[in-house]
Length: 68
Image (cartoon, rainbow, N blue to C red; front, side):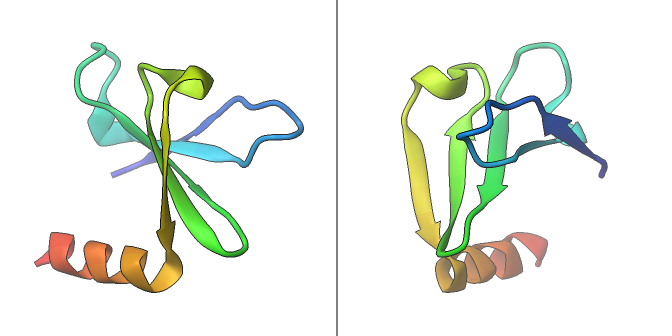
């Protein structure tokens, strides 16, 4: 898996999109790491859509269960 950096405004966190998301406009998510949380959003909605805020411990648990 590769990661693509998504262009951003100076006030936004640095968003990343997995290479598994593809370019066909299907199911895509973007992730950004903040100082107190990890943020997840739908890449099709971009900056206009809702953002899910997940604590670092919750994100680590999610990633650990997804890897299994």
